[in-house]
Image (cartoon, rainbow, N blue to C red; front, side, top):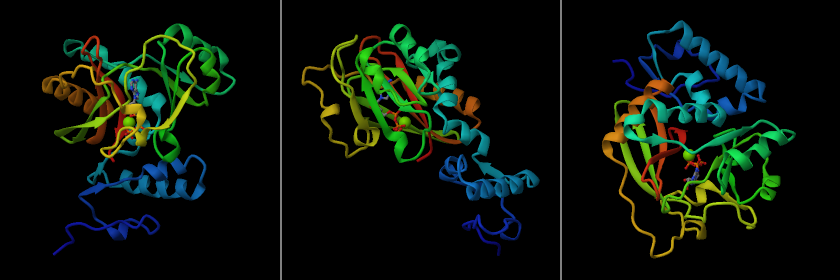
Length: 265
Ligand SMILES: Nc1ncnc2c1ncn2[C@@H]1O[C@H](COP(=O)(O)OP(=O)(O)OP(=O)(O)O)[C@@H](O)[C@H]1O
Ligand SMILES: [Mg+2]
């Protein structure tokens, strides 16, 4: 009887290791490394050429779609269009700016007029340990702390609750996680706060940045119909079966706000 499942050795030719009905991969590290590493480029090229000549093998997920999710410039463009396609569900995403390079001072300064303080600054690359190093910027002066390439995104007060949605094909699952606490809206003379996102939104996270005042009212969870509509739209837009979506609820408008899209953990 043929093997039901096996582990593929990417350093060996793939043909003799097959045939495969489905390949489930986690090549995110290799995709990010391939930006500067020729060995990773070669592994990816071999893998991609096997996939191209074996179109009946289902690939979860296609490399170009995965590559798009590893780049916040690409994934946030998709996120920013959700308010149009999901108008009936009042789904939105915070306003943001792409900062291409450190010399891009005019884009950075644009943040003062087009975004609302505080701002959250996230690296362009959305995978790997460095990608979780973020900062909260409270004023025009704080923009000196921006390290490009990155996105600057308006911070939305949400009562320190994050709703993480995990999508597996036609099914999805939601869990609640701790999240950053509310901050007074508008610029102020507070110093930039540097933090690691994995210290604030993991089940075991226990950070001063997530501790809310006791009088903060509890918010309703996101409507399950709206989450289902969001997942359906993102599956279409991303062309992926395995991914995650991070959702918060705006404390003022109760709008379902998408703050990030992730590769599957
Ligand atoms: N626009 C925003 N408004 C309010 N809080 C935000 C916003 N963006 C991010 N956060 C907070 O910062 C945390 C990290 O953000 P984000 O999900 O983009 O990072 P990440 O490194 O991709 O994390 P993960 O791997 O857990 O998805 C969120 O869990 C949330 O607490
Ligand atoms: Mg995320």
